[in-house]
Image (tube, rainbow, N blue to C red):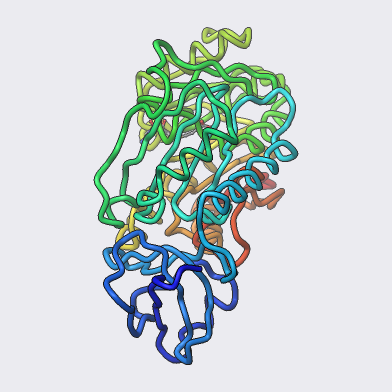
Length: 396
Ligand code: SAH
């Protein structure tokens, strides 16, 4: 390790959580920093009595003052460090991603010990999101290693959003390698075909985190009338069509997502006449429809973008769950999700239970659901568990 590495000394007793495996140190735990460390520099975190704890990214612009990169001190964070981290993440995916699948998350930030770096593969295109000053500062060396280890004909960057603002970074969007795709990219997922728009689509183009849940819920849909709420480009609907659902109604406010959902149905040999895609607000649609369903999927966008939104978001989640429960026949299934960091599993279950009470429905818990294995999370980092879901069955 270079002698000029800055040292960040913690206040007495504030080394506990990092010793327990948590990958962040908040500003309130820091006593002092040597020299003039800049956002994104690699510093050595030490306990109050100067015992080394970890090397990681420093950022005095963010409340998350330090993010762990490595708990070893005998090696510098250089090109070979990044190569080893990238290779380890990418090698795992070979085992974790099912056959017939050409799109997955290759690097999942803290979960792959690369805080703030997200890389998604869509066929031979990669989409990169950089969300921390640390990755930003080391982007050239990291991107060089990424290109070497993951050959791709195109790398497109989509670095925007709240997380970047909180790190004091401007948005950066555009090609890193190759051209802009002239048309949506075609991927397969569990042998199903999907068009993905990596330029204007949501997230990096597709909700890769729901792959295993789509497969599981599709497998429960034979003979069912299904309502897929917040259907985006039709992910859950197409799995349900393959699973043998009689009729699937997809509801989303986005006209462009709905067009793509119709094309995705057709690409897989299903008809949008039999499986209608409706442009509507789910809150209103659930109140208006007189239909009863065998399976309802609720996969809304995040209703809470910060801690201040928790109460309002909780009301939103309760409302759609309550309305959906009223539209399920006895024995019907509800697959309900929240992808908000600020609503944890415990709170989410309380909200759904509150909805069941108000709807006067009794529910069985069939399964708790989460993101797939290509979205690993450090066990010691509950903040990483953003996607949570419940698969429920109405018993009365
Ligand atoms: N289940 C999808 C992902 C859903 S993303 C999949 O597996 O791919 C959330 C979607 O909700 C977006 O497409 C967005 O357009 C839509 N949306 C947001 N607010 C909405 C509302 N009030 N009513 C209907 N759709 C909404």
